[in-house]
Image 1 (cartoon, rainbow, N blue to C red):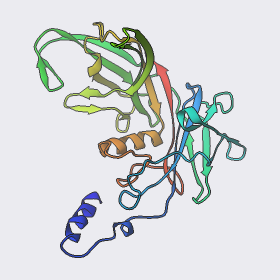
Image 2 (spheres, rainbow, N blue to C red):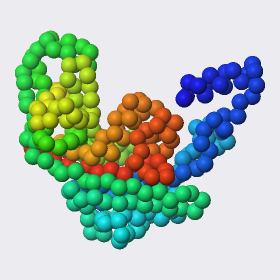
Image 3 (spheres, helix red, strand yellow):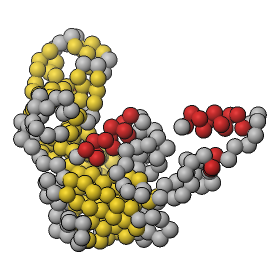
Length: 299
């Protein structure tokens, strides 16, 4: 679609003007984004709107719709309204206000004047016993990041066995704390602050590198991949890294399909704000994601 639009722009200079605004759906729709997780202390919800890729105002920053109404339910009948939380520019429900449990189905809906109401359903996956662990192997003359490492070193594998008899989706995630040091050369004063970093690891198998895994066609099998960032795990990884904890992430199918389609697009667009490349969405009458995941600490 992008190629055809780009071609139309080029041709318009020598044939006739093309109204790109009529080439796509101009009706604005709500964009709702929420992921449930029993292990987290709060549920964050983003409510925004679609915006044309081309046309008037297309380069304006998309903001959250603070005056929208966002609600969650555990049975589809009784609803709890989320509160807008200004420091993070999101809607928020604490664990006490809306507890989330593994295996349960939850419902979400949102409304705002000028837009069609949106809704979605998802079921929280179970955190299954998959014996996720790290395995250290001393090797040399293998390849990392396209280069041959000809000195002895330690490769770190992450390994787990798929829980049989059901569809499962996995990822390895890291939660790290860092210290940021700052020195003011004018005053001579120094300070430090802490921040936490969360990311999903890229795991390597031969020439392929993946972040998200499905057990389709591999029911009950062992998954084993190199975690490139953990090569020489027992060596000092950086003077500012103080703490790192690894978790096995169990995703529902909604989260898995969303991440896979987003990665296939190369991250060129923000998948829950613009939809020119058809990022996966399970939001009825709108766009976005309502999914769930669980976390299991890897010792």
